[in-house]
Length: 349
Ligand code: MRU
Image (cartoon, helix red, strand yellow):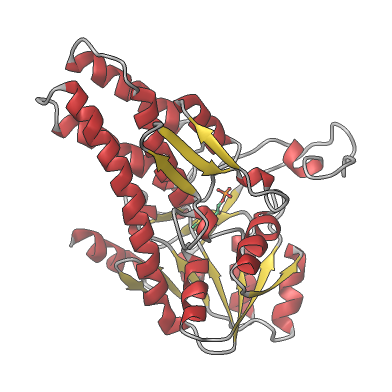
């Protein structure tokens, strides 16, 4: 697709990102030349969405290592470990961040007998591979997910699991883009996704840009919409999936899943295998990010929308129990309940 959420400019050794905090007002590309800029971009949600965060962090490593000369492998390794710790501290929930950093670390370990400049080059190749694999896996999920999408479906989605959340095409929204390419007529409802409004600002923006019929609603309108039988199915992305199929996704996903169950609406999650964390037995073990109170009370408004100094609780994610999920569409196939055995089988291949 024409948007480039993440791009590496080889000649200038620069990571170019869409600054998503400027959308939908302006499409602005920001240039990161240092690891600190990448960390800040992840922390401030300039780049966001699990797969996009992972790819950005991989390039953050490349930038952090830079062009410096390292006296020995041990100095280089020390630097790498520091960079991994630093980038991992940017956000806690999306496992793709840690997955990508782990891949980068493995490259360094596997090439420990090679000259350091060569390891640096291998790291760049790995970051490029992570980016390319995400592009391919999104297309794959989009194809696999078609089995759940019919002509004239009305689909509700949450947060942004689209082009902007990945390297290209998206996870949940990728399924919708592919349906459109296959000439299926799809209507999308996008919840605005308080407090940072990824649904309103990003999903509506990219869907409309790609000529998908999209209607925006406040998060608290979803139940009424379901009651009116205006929603045929729900598609969301994921930030981390535990071994038993519990899914961490943007705060509010849990409420949607409960509503879907009550109204007997299929609830689908679309996520690559890099979003699974099979070391965690259940969603209860997934760390949930808590963000700044100002995001709730004032950030997006001209005037504060709450009394100054009010107590605020601002968890950024919640957990959808696997038993509320009709199916998980991955780049390696479809998983259905009961997830534990199927997830184990998928990862033992
Ligand atoms: O806080 P964000 O905007 O990074 O949260 C993103 C989400 O919750 C997405 O739904 C998730 O990462 C899936 S993206 C393909």
